[in-house]
Amino acid sequence: MMLAHQREEIRALEPLKAKLVTVNEDCNERILAMRAEERSEISMLKKEKMSLLKLIDKKNEEKISLQSEVTKLRKSLAEEYLRYLTERDARKILIADLNELRYQREDMSLAQSPGVWGEDPVKLALALKMTRQDLARTQMELNTMKANFGDVVPRRDFEMQEKTNKDLQEQLESLRDDYEEVRKEHEILLQLHMTTLKERDQFYTELQEIQGTSTPRPDWIKCEDVVAGGPERWHMLAAGKNSDQLVDVLLEEIGEGLLREKDFFQGLGYGESILPSFLRFDGVVQNKKPTKKDVINLLKDAWKERLTEEQKDKFSDFFFKFLESRFGSDAMAWAYTIFENIKLFRSNELMRQFYDILMEKKSESVYIKQKETVTQLLKELTNVDNQNEGVLTMEQLSTVLKSTFPLKKEDKIQELMEAGGWHTNSSNADLLNYRSLFVEDEEGQTMPFVHKLWDQYMSEKDEYLQEIKQALGLELREEVTLPKLRETLMIIDPSLDKQTLNSYLNQAFQVPVIEAPEESEDNQENVVAQVRTVLERLQIIDVRRKGPREQEPAS
Image 1 (cartoon, one colour):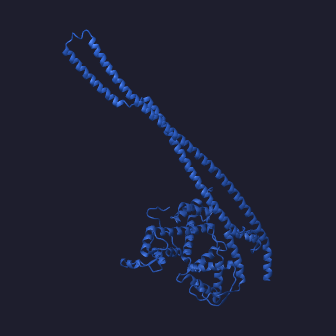
Image 2 (cartoon, one colour; image 1 turned 45 degrees about the horizontal axis):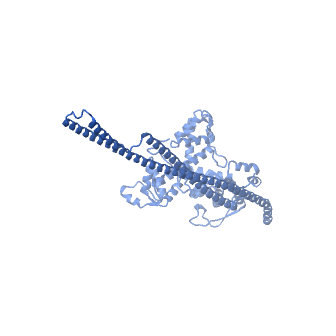
Image 3 (spheres, rainbow, N blue to C red; image 1 turned 90 degrees about the vertical axis):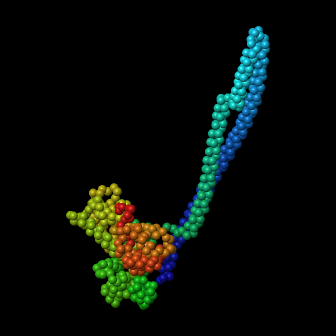
């Protein structure tokens, strides 16, 4: 019968094989199309690169021509300067000759003047002496002026040359800026080209890996005929779930079928590593094959009894005693049956939490504190409902949430409001049936509002532990002392009371911690643990912020 069943499965998988070949051909066609696109993009980039190179060459040629023009202008400026020097020297010689001729003419005019012979020679000699002194002084001033201003060119020529030089300098600077901009753009294009090549190689490698490892997207509609209950139950199970969650649902359905086919469980033995401890048994026990609803009701009853009694024993010991009181000699069989069921149905919130507590991944105080928080919130909402009508406005709900959770920020309150049914386009005056927010279905699943409370608690817990790690300033592998952790907790959460603080330290270092006298601080310095271990241990218990930091006001 098994061989016949396997043959039927092989015949059923033949169309899947043909579909796999078709998908492979489609993927090859997509690869060829992508390569053609990449070749066209590469050719376009090469053409753009050549055009940019031509533009750079053109700019270089313009720069060379401008440099040659500047050289010619400098050469002509030097020639003009030499010509002006030559003209200055010629002017000096002409002025000297002109002065000599003027002196000779004056002497001749004095000699030919008829009235000169009648003048007093002493007076004439004195006048001549004074005249020559004035001439010498004038000549000295003239030479000084020539020395100071002999090299001066006309202002009009100077301004013209200065303007020409300024224009050329501006053109040169502009060309330099253009060249630098073009050079930077060229470097950017080269970097983009190299990045594009790397991305292309990376995408090609990823494509090769995907081709080797990818499988066709599953057709979940096929599960309708396989899952017990038909299409209606499958649509109910698959509502709002992604592929990964659908795989978990399918595995649970398959596991449930296999679990029902199993008549007996083999005992795990008496090893110390076996958790929970009540499973330490050697032999064969019967599979009681309860329904999922029966298991959930049994877990709810166990929680009710646990919450009403004094919590002295470990949770696993309590649970086995509960089974003994309920089933007597069949307690071990029921223990294995319940454990296998809660290990299988991980998508169920109640079973998952129960399994984590039994496996000591979470402390029962986390579940109990969450229940107390939900009960307290329902009580506060009921107190606001004066008419006992079971409805409140969204504004009243927001007020109660802010008073019950004073440390939550506004966006967290907004998330809870939306999970409760309020939307941005709704009015605050809209009425809400607040009691429906706390209802559980027959499988123990909570409503989105309570589920959002749990998600926020877990995220706030992670943020709190991350803040502890940052305040410690140590790596995960480094060790932290007990006083160091105590000081860090008091810094980041000054509102911690001593009892809660000591419970955190007790859990983190697995040693009894009390408010010790000061002389025992040296002994506490010897209590160390790795930061990773401390955070993992604190993750197990109920860790939450008790109050805001001193410099941060509460929301």
